[in-house]
Image 1 (cartoon, rainbow, N blue to C red):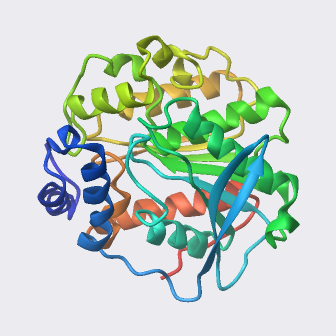
Image 2 (cartoon, rainbow, N blue to C red):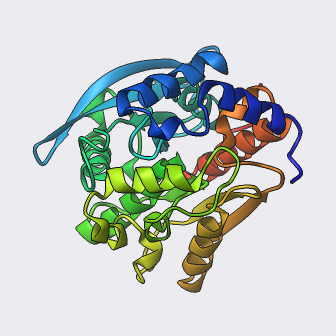
Length: 316
């Protein structure tokens, strides 16, 4: 396989912190190791970005948010970011510098949606937590000290976070929430049924890992076929917002990204697909040591800003 510049070194660095079999460790140990990646791959928060934590409540669910504001606003849109981590690992801390960079590069308020993780909080818990946070902010932005336009809300995420971003788009359609303006996705996982018994190994994402996370999120195996888990099985892709979707050449989930774009386009929904050559699964953490990965993140931010009706820019 041919890695993009800097990606082979990135893979080696990640494997030194997260051994390929780390998914066999106790869950709390997995979470600690995953959070340690932020220290192993340090990327500073851009100058001028501020953040604060908040609590939101919707339909009896109380959830945490982290709200980021750029030094200079480029519009009144808002980006809601859902982190990856297989629904099992990750935290507001693990993705802190990434979400801050999205706020900086888009010039938009960017909100990290927190959620209770599996296996303690299996499906539908995580995505319902995210929906609660999203809905609370869009219902009354001023309650959170925000001046944003709910009609210019974009959902974004990577890997399992991209899965939940897609589901949030579907929930907004199905539940009568005001329509979202767009969805920006990196390496979305959109069909968990193919991972119930393992599957293809790829750099930084093994079939065993996917099988483990699927079992944690859907302890009842039949739930993996629920459209709110595996949206490629939904069959209804009407009235979803425009999308910018990134697939990575060396990622076993690339087919999910490609299929989703195909299904959106079949419904007449604008959907742009970008295949990142030489990239592994969701390489957002590589942006500090790989210029192609940094370019990917810059283009992703520009696309999110455009979907939100803003302009953004590739800021240094």
